[in-house]
Every structure is written in C-alpha cells, then in structure tokens.
Image (cartoon, rainbow, N blue to C red):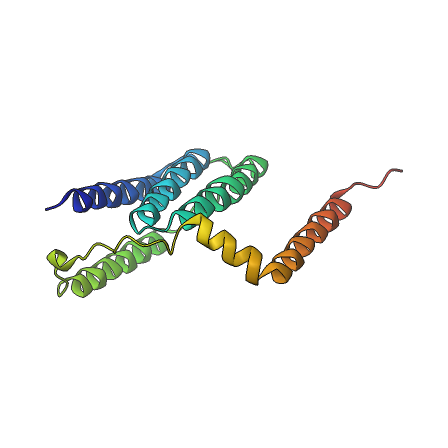
Length: 167
C-alpha cells in the first residue's frame, strides 16, 4: 500500500467521521462546524486528484460563503428543544429502517469492487489554476464578465429588498 492510498484512506475516514458528527450532533451550530471540517476534507480529496482549482473554489464557496449562510440561519432561527416538535416513534423507526436498507445497498454495490485496482492520476497540468485562469480570461472573457455583472445586480437587488423603509 502506497503513501497516496494511506492518505486517501485517512482523508476518507476523516470525511465519514465528520459527516457522522454533522448528523448526530445535538447542537445545530456544532453540526454546521463539523460540516465545515467535512468540506475541508473533501477539498483534500480534490488536491489528491490534482484538481487544485476545484479544491480552492470548494473551500471558498462552500466552507466560506455557504457555511456562513447556514450558520447565520441557524443562529437567527434560535432553535430550542422546547420549541422543536417531537417526531412520532413510527417516523423514527421508518428512518432507521430506510437508512439500514440504504447501507445494505451500498455494501452490495461495493462487494464487487476491488480496492487494489486504484490507479493514481498522472501528473498533468490540467487542473492547475494558471491553465484554468488563462482559458477563462482568454476564451471566456465575455461570459465571465456577464456573470460578474449578474452577481453584482443580484447583490444590489438583495440589499434594496432587505432595506427597511423609514416611516
């Protein structure tokens, strides 16, 4: 077993570990923080696949922007156990059964896979930021600028809509 396989298994187990903590955390804020760590470990998988640009974009977009929105939403909702409706026992039982069936399906699908057939990707310059940036700014300049104008107008529109009217 090579060093890349060891790193992969460590990253994969850390990803599964943090994902389980996302699901089983009692406090929603801790759940969001575990999800941020899960996203960082997924970015580690992108780095192992020689897709550095995707790793950086994944960290910026998901761990930065989306998780901040989740965190603010959880904090604004002020979720308390007293106000949370209790689920019936039958619904919990159905969730456990369907999760177990899904787990068995995944195990059956993985039964035929052979982990020793892993082939590390060849070192190329396809996923590097420099090549993606050159392609983006040389061939796709107009769509890139149109997307930036669209995002700017969406931000201005959301500020205008969220602004309270003065009496």
